[in-house]
Amino acid sequence: MTDDPWVEQWRLETGMATAWKPGGDWGFLSNGNHIAVYDKNLKGPTPIQIYRMVDGRPTRTLDLPSPGYIPWGINSTSLFYARGYIDLETGETTEDVWGKEFPTFISDDLIITCSDSRITCSAWDMSNGALSLRWSQKYPGSKARLWQNQRVGDTNSGYLKLQIDNTIHFISLSDGSSHNPQDSKELPTFIAASDGWIRIDRITQATTLSPDGARTGSFSMPSPFSSRYSPLLITGSGSPTVGELRRAYESQDTSWAQTSVSCASGEPCTLNGEPLSAPTDGNCTSSGLDIGDIQNNWAMSPDNRFVIVKRQAAYDQSTACIIDVTKNRTYERQNAIVPRGDLIIAVEGATLAGYSPTQRE
Image 1 (cartoon, helix red, strand yellow):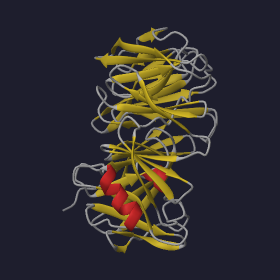
Image 2: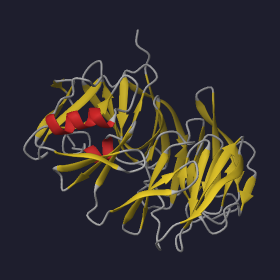
Image 3: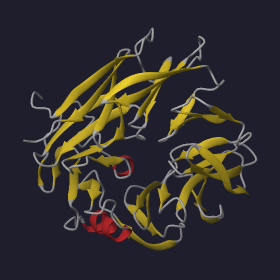
């Protein structure tokens, strides 16, 4: 679309020998203020490069030696790998803090690590780049899923949904205790609300849960194959409540939502009841917008004009669907990450491109 309001602000030639591809030889992460580019094979004396945003453009500040592991995640101060983390400003490496555990949840002020057998998980408070142990707990089972773990509530008193083997645990972030474990063999979908969860089983059956996973109710949902469904619902304060999501999923009542994307199989989606135009390749149409992927993976631009949705975590490369709520239009950037609501970084070959929205007159 020629009137795309997301304009390329900069290009960064990574110097990598091959074009980027999923599962390829190199990767990149960003927290919005820093970009880490790394060789997954950890070849050469400095396989990790750190760039800092200076006057809106990336400036190379660090060339780092291999820590022995590829980067796993990033927050506002540090780059994390299996056995430690690197300060993004100084390049200082902190190793063997969590022993044989691996990072499984990363935020600015809380890191959760878990071992991948004989399960032990630990919570670490992070302040100014330094860690201190909050708690360490053992759990039954032999294999913890190390990523795609959702949270309800804040990092002090909320709960983390953690899968171990075929069981979902709701872990108290205050003390590590496990609450209301649930079987997950049938691969249920969990939607995180502001005050709890909705568990969706067999497409049309759903259960409402409190933050600690306790059952609070159940309801039936119309089949998404024969009726409209709402993959994205946002209130004026952000994430909806369990009750609000239930109204939308059970009876298609979205009158409470500030932003409501509604879709139907084989038909164009709508935004707040009006047709929503989208590219035709399927990534950002009804066939590509799924409740389980989208509702918990969105970012809002600072001026509330754009909602960016992705099917994976913000720092995983996938298609970013950019919804302009003022014009009912959708734009996209493929192979992209969304470190902030006003910054999308996409990869084209071995080049990174940064996009930000133009200012309205």
